[in-house]
Amino acid sequence: MHEVLNWLVTTIGALGYPGIVILMAMESSIIPVPSELVMAPAGYLAHQGKMDLFVVILLGTMGSLIGSYVNYFISQHLGRPLILRYGRYVFITPHKLERIERYFEEHGEISVFVCRLIPVARHLISIPAGLARMDHLRFTIYTILGAGLWTTVLSYIGYFIGAERELIMKYSHQALLCALGFCAVLVTVYVWRYRAKAAGIQVADPE
Image (cartoon, rainbow, N blue to C red):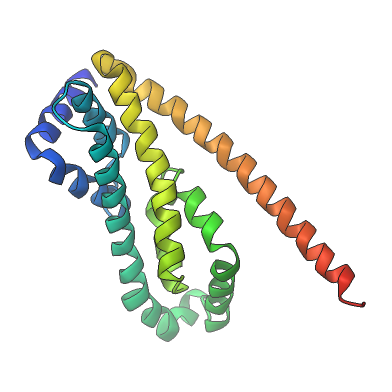
């Protein structure tokens, strides 16, 4: 792992800022490049004074947004017509597609934000969002919030413990566990508030 991190630091240093955008765009699209192996080494380069930490975080977030929109547009312009035409053969009917649309209309923000903090889910969440034609402004804002938070955490890990590069994966794993715990709490509160609001509306309806 030490040799891999050395190679990544050297590679990202050679690619510069455009490399961060490209690698993070790949990470958020169909090519699963681990973000830990991009942002943490970039943070370490910022610690060395070879990059600016703010720019690293900004470009990492921008790359994540670009990659997310690759999946979004592929799903919207290619996946949706295919599902409407052939979805019934794999049990995805137009009715189910309408349910996906309604779900993202009501819960798109929390879904995109939370999934940006979870491995694998961060690569996939753009696909149903694209199929559902989620509003671009909402999709962009919550992708930036989720991706920005995660890239910030990883960048600071690399910045503060970059000199101990063998610890990068250890602390990245701990950050992931914290992110999962945060997401669990956030989703629990969201579901509780949503149900409480729905119950309040049901009680008020007869009046």
